[in-house]
Image 1 (cartoon, rainbow over the protein chains, first blue to last red):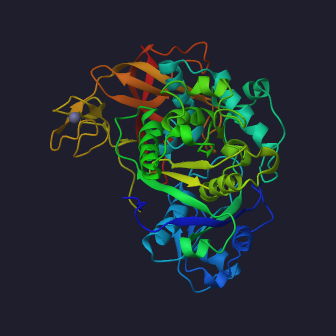
Image 2 (cartoon, rainbow over the protein chains, first blue to last red):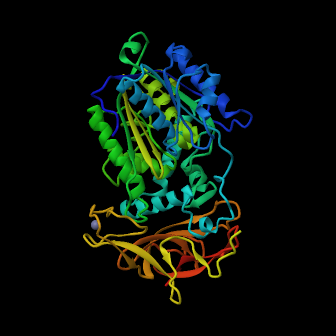
Image 3 (cartoon, rainbow over the protein chains, first blue to last red):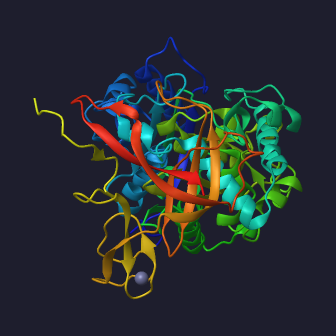
Length: 379
Length: 140
Ligand SMILES: [Zn+2]
């Protein structure tokens, strides 16, 4: 069960992230150190006062959190390494919130980090079982089938999802920490190199490296800081066995459950949201998450995107950072970086991509095969 | 080191190779609600019934639900290939490669009839020298 809102209040008082990029010449510990130090400086909190830290990562080896955080001056305090696929960072943040809500810590740190190689995820090419069955572990092929299933059922078009890639890139233009910032057009997206037909490379998130950190504290600690942001909901859901290989099930069921619980916990609904960072690992995923989060009726995510409802200045600003599609997706860092973006938006610190009068924000992250996390943050 | 098996091994648990019989795909059917799944389970994922799941032989006929033409894959895997999701007659939705058709969206039609065929797993062997039998879909 998620930690409940009837415990103590948890607030975010410090955030930071590195730029998301290849970072070929930097160690992952150095990236983690940079994010953690800057988040603590943002909070005005000494590293020695951190009581517990949670570090989300997927492929960084044993105790990567300790390696990074000892460099940032957090030495001796408990560090818990968290793996939940692409939701590892969100899970680390969820645990930091739970520690403060539960009263076991007044100052907790959530860190996410990942250093990724180029191209396809490493796999043993000698494994005949992997290659003889169709792309079971290959995400682009899976999401190409998700697109075709959504298209068959609801009439979603390639042009509509291309508009998501264009919109997120237009947001990334104003985000110096985004991996890809050159403006693109719908034509560019449709004509880009095919990865898994009909998805082109501009409809798929890149592999990036980077780190992000957030400082979560109790109400009495937050009172002495400026602009604390309250955590109104912190929900983590797990997958339940699905009905065979329906491509839509795995991207609808768990996320819809997580969103419903988050709205209930925060006592708000989708119409109350001003800014959202969601798990747009593929352009079609963002469209389906509009529906999962209740921003529009089921099946109308494509139209929602095409109407411009999800861009800055629209009904609700989605993926203001550029999202996974343009900001990049260092697996373990992503969930915490989403919190960084929303906290900065709620503080009014987002510069040229600032959402006017942003007061309520949401982050959503999915780790395939296991976990979905939704957080609601408020001023 | 274990010597390689004398006959091909199945690529997945739900591919059954009876001795002296034809290979087939095995589903798990809920006696309470009729839902068909792949992979063993004690509880029905649709209706939640317990102890109602029985193994059934799945049909080798079905229709193409959705597909993707995969252009980028793991090192050593030939591309492009067609990844498909097929609804089998009588229940069961199965993911696998569609062969015997050009990897061209103009040639592939969603809803087209397909049959399940069993072939050597692309001629590949694992480190122990075992060969594998896989299932594929072909236009019917
Ligand atoms: Zn049932």
